[in-house]
Length: 339
Ligand code: ADP
Ligand code: MG
Image (tube, rainbow, N blue to C red; front, side, top):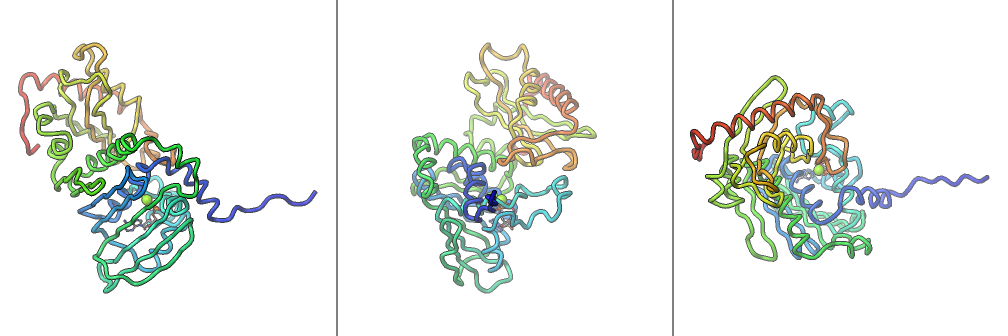
């Protein structure tokens, strides 16, 4: 029998990978915001049109890219963040897979403008369906702007599968919230269809929560703070009387990364036992810090699930700490804005 196996061309492989990484416009928003953070930006602006279906643009004032890197960053497995497999267990960046930009460039019209601090002149590059259309020198500020237009233009099935603009916008705002909450020390701005949506100055965790969810949130917050050998917990839970029927504000961050964890959610919920009205859910903004060697982030392409070495101890500690904090607030409500 003749040989029938062939290696897929890059643009096809990229399009397949894109299926995992890019589910909807919000996935692009997440990847671009995370890249800006990894580039050490102190100010990040997100511009969206038509719920991200026609434009998603992220501008940062980070380290930028050289002319060669501006081309390389769209190759699959091209990353500046890890060099060897061991680095996966000592991660200090959001990214490491080196496939977000390659995936996005396979299924959208992408333009990148970037300049590094020392360089006199920057570069601009346009990519369509994984193919470089042009690259030219450009006069731009230090940092990077990536514009992603016409997402899924070459995958009609995915494009048609997108939800209504309000639903897709909701997903984008959820991602924006998660990233902005994880990094209160960075300024974040968001515009949608030409109107400002968020303008979040650099601040601290409490103020960032208040800036996003409104001034009334401040008095609802109960601080949580505890440290053991394996985990440091900080952040806030909402006072029990502000629990909601819908699953409202529930955020876990592990080493500044938003994660979903039904298991840890259960730890927090059970700490609220006896304090919640029937059928309501507690709100929380909890930041966990653990040794980077004690977690595995590489278990899902979107990196929102992680595996802890010592899940049980973290569960027990989280439950006890939240319980303790709830017990204290009724005695001395804390309204200190600087904490
Ligand atoms: P990863 O983030 O996993 O490394 P990406 O495909 O998201 O993979 O990005 C590829 C590379 O492009 C990054 O490793 C980084 O070197 C570079 N890069 C991407 N976005 C930016 C940015 N906003 N500023 C500077 N460099 C960037
Ligand atoms: Mg990335």
